[in-house]
Image (tube, rainbow, N blue to C red; front, side):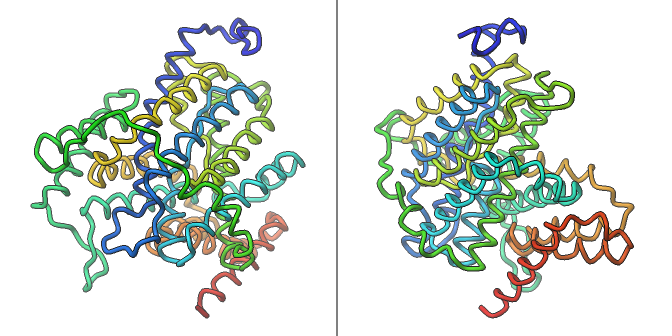
Length: 442
């Protein structure tokens, strides 16, 4: 075991790896409750039956997808990186694809499955480097920041901090409402924990908020803490049964968005975590292909189980900071996700007021990429800005990406920088123009 994971070479031991694996799990355990809350659309009032997914099944799918994906990453790629259904992509799945576009969640799962299969093909064929190089860095950073704003906006809404206002579209909510005040309390507590650099700050922030909610009567006490694993039957295999409905331009854009965000989110996380752990050699990632394959495989398996795109988590850096250096830490994290399957009764305690602070804070962490964009170059600033601002305002990550990718070739050509545009960008330009034309007719 030590030899396979190269303990001696990397200067680590079982104690460090176990502590690192536990730390990573605590840092991202919030997804076990946020993901079912998001995909079930439980925060949407008066939602017709069948529009959102079954929360219990999503909880099980989330835990299994995280466990399987993290185990693949640990055993195949030997990286101390954990995977789980991605924040941002789950919100895009639920609020943009299902709620706004009106696409059934079963068909949306088929889109996730196809994106995972595409990811596998790209990884095995070696085309991933060419695609990474084709997309300008500024747009990659803009997509990350835009998703951060989108997630934060969803968090503000579910907390009741931002509400509908017929006169100006949005406005402040009722701060005399107990649930809204509980969410605000959760944000403050989580911010304090993260400022104090507490590992698992988001998870512990949710825990404290839930306890305060129960103590004040705003949240009902759970009847039990440990229970049977919820059935996967409502979601398992739905992605395989709806392939005939994905051959539309609208679904092509959805699949491209799933693929694009997962691809670059994974690449960025792997680079950041491996650099922090001292695993890079000559500025290159060893076993990068295996790591990307593990991520793509996790997305494919997760879609079949019944959850949105599974991706690598930047929270893995918390585990690395605690000592993790090898894939053994990921094996530990995977084991904890399996153990978490038996804590589904706590789903009833994790209300919108408890999960909203997690959404808001994750958004804060994601917009840090704004600093990487060269705002002084107008031809770059315009598509980057439109990508970022369109996501929360249109309530769609796909629309933000589409606007940025349409304007990028235009501004670059007009500034005399045609040669810097990769041919792939022209193809995406056409696809996204057709996407807007298609939407205009529906």
